[in-house]
Image (cartoon, rainbow, N blue to C red):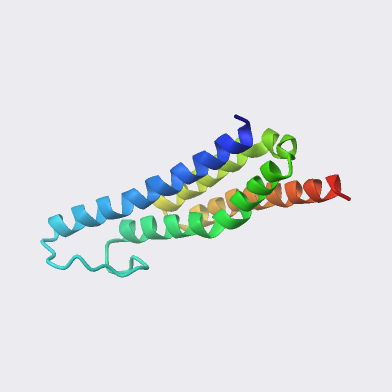
Length: 137
């Protein structure tokens, strides 16, 4: 298995972990606050700030999935994983760090930090796409 496939699987696992964190948190929130309803707002606005941050961190990871996973899948499908393998773990690490910072804080420095880690992912994927396209031109 190559680094691109492992990093893509890691991204999917990270999404799944964030997704599991949501109902675990909401269950604990319901029990702590003796809340009767199992209904929650999809944007996380009806729970604590941390619950909102979990919701947003998950949705943010989902929003980035198409261009990150799409680029990785394109590389694997076109036998171009040699292009993506070198930085695949960097993209995964940047994704995880961005999510963790999102979970920890919404302060201005945290938002700036999250943006930097997003730009790392975006920049690497853009570079990969250019390199893959050039391979076939």
